[in-house]
Image (cartoon, rainbow, N blue to C red; front, side):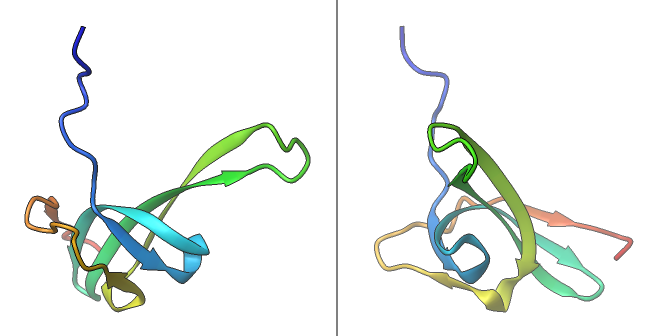
Amino acid sequence: MPSPLTRVPPLVRAREAGGYAYLLAWVETRAGLRARITWVEQYREEPYQWRWEVAEVPATRVTQMAGQSYQGVPRERRVSG
């Protein structure tokens, strides 16, 4: 059976993620453009457990990478914020 996953978000570099993260969306706010990113971290207390982290950071704090396609990244507008 084919996977329902049709595409993987492009990678960016982000200090908040400690390296690479997936770019989920560009978010337009009154304060400026933000990037919604996600990455996986390993629990320190339980080294065989993983969790997804998600953050919104100013777009200037992520670095796009060569070879990644950012054309299909969703763009959201947030009225408040």
